[in-house]
Image (cartoon, rainbow, N blue to C red; front, top):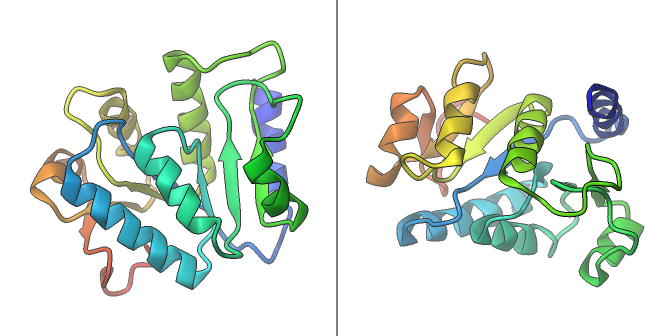
Length: 187
């Protein structure tokens, strides 16, 4: 896996017009206010042309992807399985236009995502990104465990200002408002 990890780093750093990537994570089950804030943030990132990387697996992540794909913002989907033999129909146009990259740190023998493989993928992309944004990490979830690992890194980490994200704020994630952001931070 290490060789593939280095390959992914080189692929995603190859285009000098993409200055940095922001990774986006969100637990599968998510409070309604966080869902709405995530959609607002995706609109903001779309307007800014923010480069976003994620597995885009959870329902909120999938909707953020759908919003981002309605623009020319660079998007990288990192699969928690091997690359498909056929590109999904909804990805063909953005890939052909050079605004989406579909990659995997796993070979073709990995046919379906498991919790273990998704965790490995998420650690790889969190390490690759310049900044981490976690919309929500349910208490006791795999996403929260991932965030505990990320919180030890010297990397900008953000979440929403919400009563539901206090666990992330306690880990050192900076809380922001999706419409205004925070002064001096490129979220």
